[in-house]
Image (cartoon, rainbow, N blue to C red; front, side, top):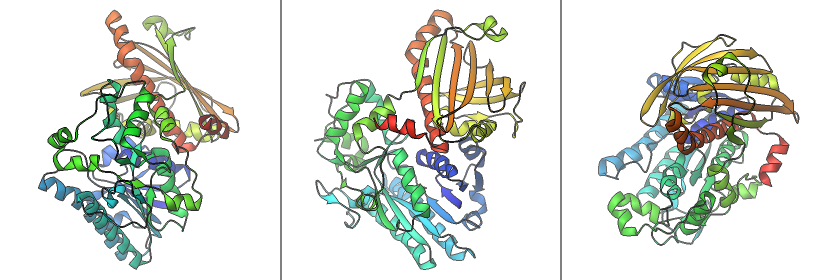
Amino acid sequence: MRIFLTGATGFIGRALTLRLLREGHQVVAYARDAAKARANLGGEVEIAEASAGLEQGISGCDAIINLGGEPIFVGRWTPARKALLKESRVSLTRGLVDAIGKSSTRPKVLISTSAVGYYGDRKDERLEESAGPGSDFLADICDAWEVEAQKAVAHGTRVAIVRIGLVMGPEGGALQKMLPPFQMGVGGRLGSGRQYMPWIHLEDLVEIFAQAVTDPRFQGPINGTAPKPVTNLEFTKALGHALGRPTIFPVPSPALHLVLGEAAGALLGGQNAVPAKLLGWGFSFKHPELGPALEGIVRPRGVEIGPAQNPPDVEYLRRRGAKKMLSATTEIDAPIAEVFEFFNKAENLGAMTPPALAFDIQTKLPIPMGTGTVIDYVIRLGPVPMKWRTLIEGFEPGVKFVDSQQQGPYRSWWHEHHFRAFDGGTLMEDRVYFSAPFGPIGRIAEQLFIAPMLQRIFSYRATAIRLRFGTTQRHDQRRAA
């Protein structure tokens, strides 16, 4: 199917794009900044520039997934900010519905987002999809948002609305904002901690959207939450346990109100929302329990860093040396030819790179890959942009390729990518031999900052690859265990 996607470059959108590509769908990403979208989404995605309009963008599309909207918890809720939060959701949805009505070949389905904030603060009340809306600001936004989406039914389009809880995933979303104080050991409950926090793992959420595209049962509101909602206190304890940190510093309600103003009410209230429809349909959650879900995100497995042992005997490493070796393995449910073809396109690197790095290729695309190819790109480490020049040192299609850093932040960086058939799919092995710059100071930085950063980057990369291609059955069984 040809799927039109708004919000494609966001936290959920990037993951969903990869998941849809796995099914063979053609993704058309609606973007105000086409260059940024191409850098983030890779070479397999078509970009529909916002300047061309929604009517042209959805032309020929079989489905629309609407993830657009300004971030809720950025800045205080001034009257102007509140108007923007509502208008960014309602006007975009209205524009999509109008475009559907004018289209000569109307999309079969519109999947729009909403949030569990639709229900307002309902204390311990069990909230299934049939529950009515609340009366606070977020409830008002969600209600207006959903009303607008439902108007597409009049055009013969199936409408599904996913009311999303707090989304847990690597390198983004609600968890990314919560982590710093918990990592420093100063995290704690918000207010009384008794308010419910309906949550969902990113992998489960994108699976909901992927199924909704083709499954006619997905109509009307659907709670996009894990089957076991937790209170804020339970969430706090689970996150502290996952990180191995204490959680003894509560944030009093008055302090939250002082810092956030009206927005504090959304954090101090809650919804005991349950995915009644999904459970009734037999939807299978990969991450039904909060504890294991958080541990898998904050303590990912599969990436090891240690002393460089038996590095390749090549001129580059003889000249520059290598103190450390990173090794990572990813099991992929796809044949080698398909996986290697994905890596054969340099523009797909952005789709596998954490958004915080702001990965941007400077070399003119497309880039023919082969031994001797040079690729220039820019990454961002915190506020500092850094140039990186890569040389492809070796290239054996379907077997391996090797790249080295010619210019960049490391003293040495020799990266081998190996591919071999495994368990009906592909086993991809990364071996990186590297050294930090600046001698003893660099070795301290390596221990404190560089190694944890590389583990996060390569874990994110593995997650992106699994979203794009799926995982082997054996890998899923190990994760479940």
